[in-house]
Length: 222
Image 1 (cartoon, rainbow, N blue to C red):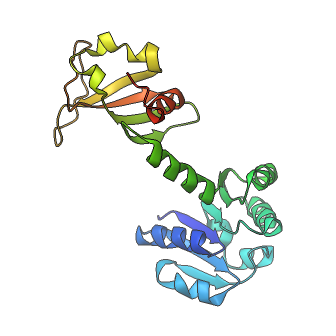
Image 2: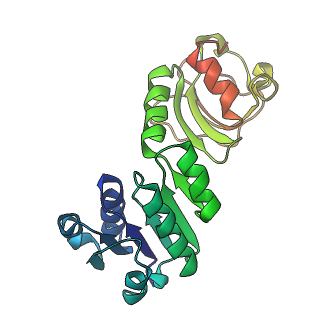
């Protein structure tokens, strides 16, 4: 049985989510007051409805309680977002994701029952800034607030040194879990502490990312 996802509000944010989920065979129920927006996602959703996303009777009439997850995609109107979240709570939706315009809206939406908050503009701005600042870091996958998987190229000062000599756990609060010594090479995961860094080494590590990222951004990885 396919997972059912509800999308309330079909602006750029909501319609993108509806289309992406639909393309990967999720059952999407989408609602927006604008028929043009509903029609735009028609081929990607199992049910597209023109209507008020804050209307609880409407949600009940289309079986919205079947949704496993609901995305409240209207972030500019706080009242609508709050009512939509409250209605989802009344319907017993287990996972409610809401878009927020700012930090205050985020706190309010969490308070009324949203489980997860998305701030697309802030998150995209953070991502662009990080990409600009990076020197050696290739990618960061956040696991939670204090842990991430970090993929990075090694500084020239590390070449010829072993992992045990570099002592990255104490210096940078990271543990190396994989290494490649050339592009296209398969990632090595069973590493010896005596493994030496080559000029083209790329490491994958897990740990606290904030200190490591700051040192990379300021070109202080030595």
